Amino acid sequence: MKHTFLLALRNLQRNRRRSLTTLLAMIVGVCSILLFGGFSTDITLGLQTDFVRRSGHLQIQRQDYFLYGSGNPVAYGIRDPQKLLDTLRADPVLKPMLVVVTPTLQFGGVAGNFAAGVSRTVLAQGMVAADQGRMQLWNEYAFPLKPHPFALEGTSDDAAVVGRGVARVLQLCMALHVPDCAEHEPGHGQAHEPSAAAADGASDAASATAPADVLALAALEAPPAEAKSPATHIEVLATNAYGAPNVGSFTVVKAEQQGVKELDDVYLAMHLPRAQRLVYGGDTPRVTAIQVQLRHTAQLPAARERIRQLLAQHFADQSLDVLDFATLNPFYDQTNRMFSVIFGFVFTLIGAIVLFVVSNTMSTAIVERTVEIGTLRAMGERRGGIQALFVSEGLLLGFAGAAVGVVAALLIATGINHSGISWTPPARIDSIALTVRVWGQWRLMALTFVGLALVAGLSAWWPARNAARLSIVDALRHV
Image (tube, rainbow, N blue to C red; front, top):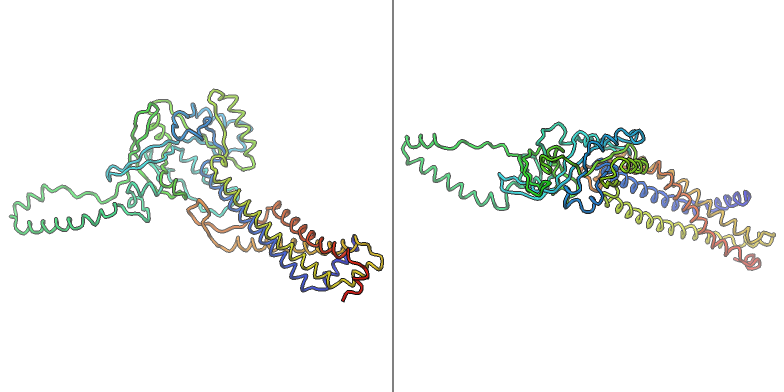
């Protein structure tokens, strides 16, 4: 076997230009597969980071709340949430895994800026601002993210944060410095400009004819000028636990873009106590979910199993369930499946190219060495030996191209990661540095290396089989 590989290596060196061309095709194919795989991995981990920072790895909810609770969150409230929080935080098995355990209350309502005469439906969420700020710091995969403090941290009890779509509808753009929006309805400002000019003209005409004492009295009775600072107060209407409407007044401190327009148009965040007062009034407050953020995503199965054990032991009367971030965000699995299909298509396409390139190289070599094949067969070489020789040449080309391709992909990925190129990933609002995660993806590199090397070996098998079946006499007299 060693003799066969040495002879195959010498044969590849006989026509170096053709061998290098084939090798280059292998290198380009391996680089393409690894770079695309590293890019798709980066997308997947980026989505995971966003979802975990926003809602945690796991959420404890009442059973079926995820399916039906948005229509009636009061019916799916978790009783005695503080006891549940204390149980999770004090558990010796779970405690080393935990980063943040925090309650949230989500409900639907109507937010209105009644000073402007506008309102819209919103999806409100009460949360503990300090806990949400700590969740924003989670970055297991070391993405080059700029830290953004949570907008509700350090604000008053009546503070609220809205999506930019909500701010536009409620005409809070000027106060919250929201770009690309107009404070007035279409044509509103233009319709009133002529009347205002006419009023000014009439006032000037009256001033020219009225006596001085009348003008003095009019100036004393004129209403004071209104303050020019825009208001940020809104009222939120929600249904309380008894089905009656309840209204709360809030001060909007910031409008944040959410990355997804559907969420941006309904997003409203407030402090948890105010949300509980709005929904439950004077009754015992509840929450709709307990968010659990772990140190490492790999701990998720163990943490979920332990939480289920604790719920069965201490909260069996509430029918609680534990859902992971992938279940709560179907877009995550959909994106992963899409990139898996694209990766399979790219791998198949490049594998077919490698197949034809190596097969063409081997076929050309066989035609050129037909007399040599006949000589070897006349000297007693078996058909299996001839076939093994050409398959070995294909395997050598495959392994050499795959090895150099892996090294080249690592170098190119390193160059991209340090190039400073930025882009905006899906569901994000800020651009980040482009990264391609090839290093550390050992499974991807092994699959690509072995897969394309075997494709190269298999592509040489059919021409080698034909070479081994040549008649000795016909091969020797081949011109």
